[in-house]
Image (cartoon, rainbow, N blue to C red; front, top):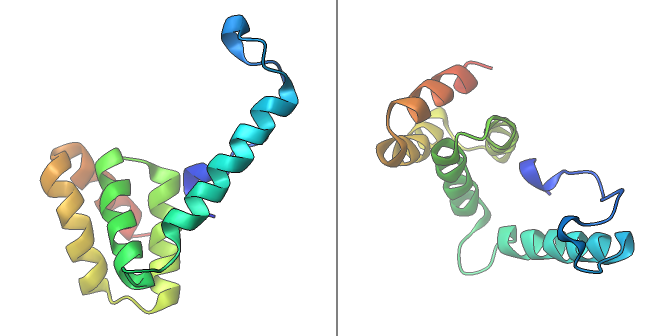
Length: 109
């Protein structure tokens, strides 16, 4: 599992008084994690393509933990710096200057 999906399980009742218990919230989180695993699994799109998309979306969302995780995994998968940069520039093209600054900071680490 990647980045923002790494959250601690709920430890208290859900807000809003909807009658949910801690176990209900934990079950929802578990189902969400299962969804993330399925969405990230290679299928019609191969693993490198999905990782490239994840980089672009992490840059666009300006999610530093996500971007760090996806950059590390992309390098481990053998994506070249050129491929990583190209994916990041897609996110930057939609996210503007803040996305560019984040990527430039993260690509050095």
